[in-house]
Amino acid sequence: MFAATDLAAAFERVNEYWSPKVIGRVNDQLLKVAKLKGELVWHAHDGEDELFFIVKGQLRIEFEDGTTLLRQGDFLTVPKGVRHNPVADEECWVLLIEPASTLHTGAEITDRTRSLDEQLS
Image (cartoon, rainbow, N blue to C red; front, side):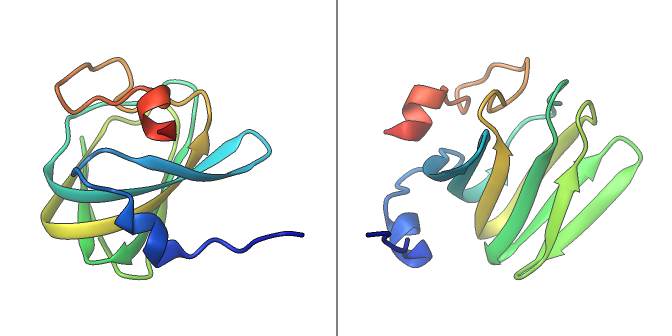
């Protein structure tokens, strides 16, 4: 039998900001939930697009040529190779959809960078 995933309960597993947790898979795409607050890091994913869907709160994504504000219910796909920096002034809940090969912070390594193993735990 197939079981549904309770999205709110999935967010309860997230105890740290900027530490996504994998909650599902569709072909080679991973579905991840994350709680965000503050600033991540300027980075790009050279070979993968990344979708941000805002479940709660709002998120500002800075780009080299401007900024996009996402509010609850909005989504945005950041194309591969585009440098961006997610910023949440207040706690924001986001559902990420991205290929399993996507490195959390691209080639940039910081104390907030999480491995796929950490995201699967």
